[in-house]
Picture: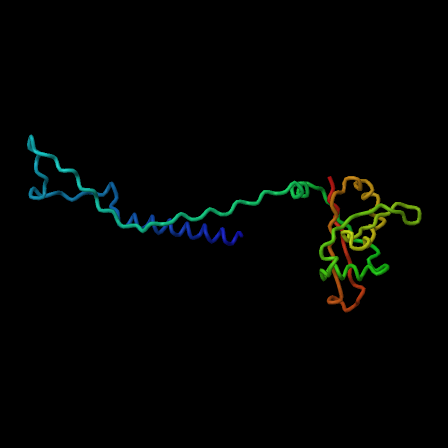
Length: 197
């Protein structure tokens, strides 16, 4: 979009410069010194009762008609959700336990956009681990199957997540790694971004 807009602006600038240069070259300047006129070329004095001839217009260079450049498309208004997300605070954590109970398979399907993981959303649940508060990040499968836990918030980050848990309105997940990086089937990892107010 920016490249098209820059191209249009460049064309308009070039056309303007060519037009300006052409007008300067072919149209005499107003303060140009006039050559003296010989008496033979001098206009005759007006006689009383003689009709006055209208002045002849100066010959103007022919300039081809130019169509105005179309206005660039107006920016799409942002949705309330987009505005809320732009103003949100964020917290990013690297998920723990991504190699536990088939989670590598879930992460691979998200990474390769295999259905139903290609259109799932993400969430966070508060749970317990050994009697202490814990948080799991899951893929919401939109009712097709049960939600799939992708990983846990590391113990060192649980206290901070506890403070913001009620204010989280969106969770994003980023999957990284995979067999193409080190040849190991269990090499996927994930991080979660919590958007909160």
